[in-house]
Image (cartoon, rainbow, N blue to C red):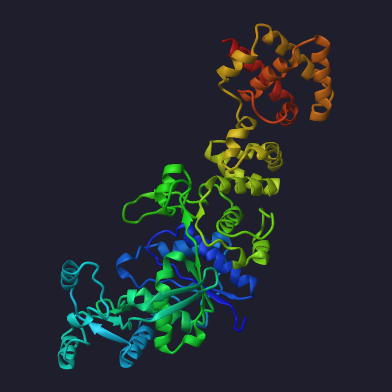
Length: 508
């Protein structure tokens, strides 16, 4: 590559960051790190009417949680700032003037009502070479009238002058050559005097140029605007420093057609935002991956493989491994279905890889939330519990359902298991079992198991019925890890006490 790789992720602070936007940020980050480049976070807040309080802070927090490190941005600073577009007004005014002075743009005074009337009068109306001279703008009006309107403070916009009939060739690193004729483009609004801010199209081009962005990696919904951006680079005389473009495919619904939406998540029960979002206007709360118990590493791994593959059979990959393998050569051009179940699988796999003590620390708040006094249990005890049940969980919160009996003795017993496993002679056998357990010289799992199994065999009892009835008294149902691992952790006194309570409760 001829120049240093510099990419930018440029969200608008109009609400929570969608998971599709997270994937775009991730691909920018992987590409930049793969080539030793920089990652810029630019806040595109030129649409003042759609600004949502808290959205910018949300974006920063989400990227930080996911491990997508920003080199330059509003928080980080940098030599190319400001990194918030609302703070770059003087820069945009200067560039709007350059286009006007060069005859590449013009001023238009059409009111919303006049534009609506034009659309009603002409099907598929487009503000372009075929219609601009019939509208109220600096091309169709005397210069003196234009100057007076501006002096009087009449609201206006600046439109880009599109010359029709040109084939604009866009070279996309993912999609190859895309040719679009300029005649289908309208004279896009670049600047609005009402709020003294540019539109996306102008601000985007000016900032990418001045921040020396080498690659623009964004969603495919922006592909139709690429020819316009090519023409803007040309109008400014920047064609030689124009960035390379990559338009990523959309994330699609898990079922049916169309792009992924929040409604799909609500309907099928999965988050579409990285963090929980509290809507400041409605008060509505939308769940996030973090609050749903996903590990950031799992989310990153899951998202990376939605539309990209490493070129081999690798699935579980750390951020460093993703960076090492990432290339647009293995990106799909078509949309990727959002297989949310695969996301749960990734979370399960990452939980299995996590150190038991680390997972136990994450489990402690869950225990407290269920009323458990965790001071009564040692860290070693909680860690041992986690090690016994972690292979059964997809989320940290699942540990409670799998391990609650280690902390709270059962108060109820499964009716289904009672009918299947609790026979007429079971109470007698359980009392005999108590005596066997009391007599054990060692209560460790490896020592206790052969002794108790030998006793069952000597008595000629049905092993399945005895062990499941035993488990029922300890757990409250016939589930859980190896029975003698349970008894070792509970200890002799608690084990005996639970069997005695079980006999009385089930009889009653």
